Length: 214
Image (cartoon, rainbow, N blue to C red):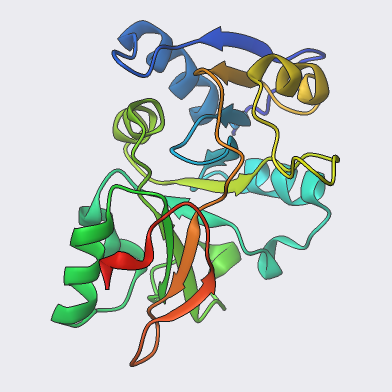
């Protein structure tokens, strides 16, 4: 049985992106494996995520975001492209070349989903894949051994759409999540979203990632 964390206050852990401390990474991964929710830095905005294999944790995130898990648009953070075959149908050479040029980087790619998606996402025809250029989140995914389901941390302020200060994030989310990682100030620009599920690439959202990859 999975044990789900219900801390009154999230643990605040400082991890330096230049050389992530293995002990701190292990501590966060232990929380993820037990069904905890973690806020972490990426190469764009801070993200909220959990272990892709933990249904209870997925349900917690969906409840926080106010969406039905089956209809959510959460993306999957992978360590590299080797995870693709687990969740994505076979892609052609030109699509793979785009991914190789762009990743790791500030992009979310919409790709055709495979039949091997976790149960809550079985009905999805497509899936959003992220491989951020950030050593902290990639170290977490590597040690966890499978992708992290991710969604961005939005700010209530109309001017600054995403929260960038980890201390303020901790104050705001301390009773909703189990760990907030302080990996330095985040960006306030989201990833560029590109749909590669059809014959031609379609720009869904222009963000931090350059469109010059095409």
